Image (cartoon, rainbow, N blue to C red; front, side, top):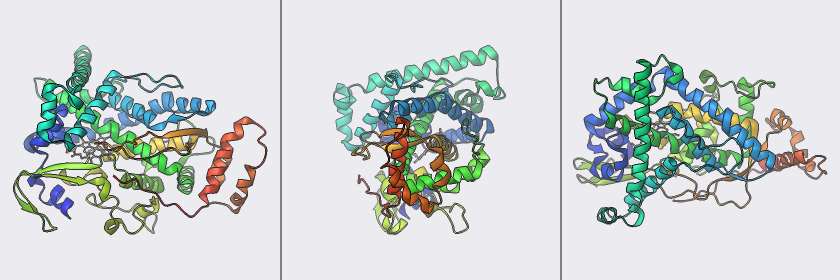
Length: 479
Ligand code: HEM
């Protein structure tokens, strides 16, 4: 009730405020970092851009291209070499390349298509460092980080260097957008092939004089919004699915039943309308976002003093932090099984997805400042889930420590070390609903393997046999 009050009912009284603005200074006056009329202007411009059909098709086309040209070939390579990869690193590179293509029209190619030493992208590295500094600024007194910044020591030491790298990269992209725009004199997004968000922003802002700062601040906000959120969601989702084989089987069965024919393997048929039919997959994604919201906490400041529905008094200028992570795990909200990964929680008796109000399912925030990218995020997550689950089974390396990092984004502290195995089609076709025959499958693993390529199948069999265990309980890492 308190969060609903802060985000919605008394929205005007709870702003980002000057503390937030200072901590997140790298975002300039972009949508995340602005209040009142500046925020409203940003929101209106971005909202009309997100509603465009050309935006949705740009996102879908970009994701498909990256999946087909890099992510799937890379995972094929890894599975053939039977080696271990950090899926988190791969998803971060995948999301970074995609969001740069979508927002800036420029692909930094940080994700290779085969197993080589992964390239280091200076801009991405600088972006990560800035993120670490932002978190640090939340937990030390203001005077301390200000002093460190002034003296250029501690975590603040490299901040200005990293900020410079980020700004130079953005400046280059903005300049080349203008050059192209002038060269081809293309004014509307009718030229779909060359459409990107920067170009669309130039048009949407509708001013005669192009405002470089507005473009820079909007671009970095969109990059920040669309990179880590997607990679973090993918990472936790794939970990949960890989460790819950019954859920994995149900997702695959739903994909097969709805729109993947036997012959059809790649490219997948993922027209957006078809994605809406995947009720169980949608439930699994919501459940993963409930337990592991990519943005784990929110930050507000009270303009005037107020009394919260709980009866607590808030003084003017009080900084309020609420934890989206904890809210997704509250027993009084989600019930006794709140720590379990149960996609069924999101499905009604009639087989439709249940709508849960945003102040309860808070991963995308609630009220007038809720996420503008929610729909497009589900589209992206579903496309990647279909493409990868259809082709691979991910075996999480035994003993790998999976726990959340303490940061502004809920990454995995030690990454996600997995062995991808090519999916074995026989198992895909028959393992849900689990036929009685499945009980015999563990015996297969005792047979001598005639060909080394069957080793992944043994792993799949092992994972299936463990699916028969009734204990699906998550051991939640606590923050
Ligand atoms: C699973 C993926 C995502 C999650 C969980 C998520 C979550 C959130 C949250 C919690 C906020 C509120 C942040 C704040 O006020 O400080 C937010 C705002 C926002 N998100 Fe997302 N987001 C996701 C993906 C995206 C994507 C892909 C985009 C677009 C590229 C996007 C665009 C935005 C924008 C523009 C806002 C600012 C809204 C405002 O202040 O009015 N998000 N998102």
